[in-house]
Length: 123
Image (tube, rainbow, N blue to C red; front, side, top):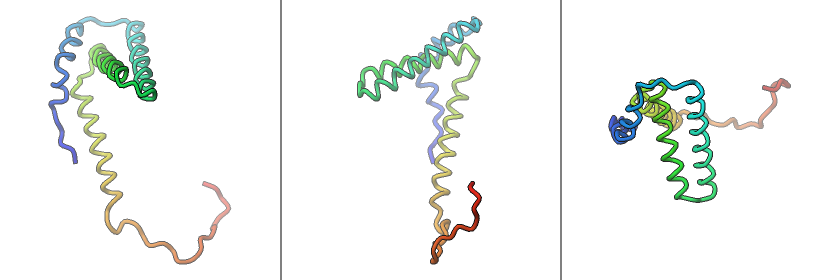
């Protein structure tokens, strides 16, 4: 299993502090929508850069994407630590499912006879 590291949010402290500086301002729905579109564009650029094999553009668009997410979280009042906890929980769940799928004796023996269709109903 992975070990939860609360330092993930602290490693982004400079960006978190910058995004928290404008936290007192309430953005209009139009500004929030534009910010969300910008994040989507950056994610698309990052994906295109990966497909093209352009490492420089992957780095630039990834940095913009993370910065945009931090700003969006600040705009929506989301605690970044809560996001890191959610990511950790998802990782743990994936590892748990993987380990459970590897439990010895889980798989039963195959039938010796030929496979027969027992019904005409499709799933």
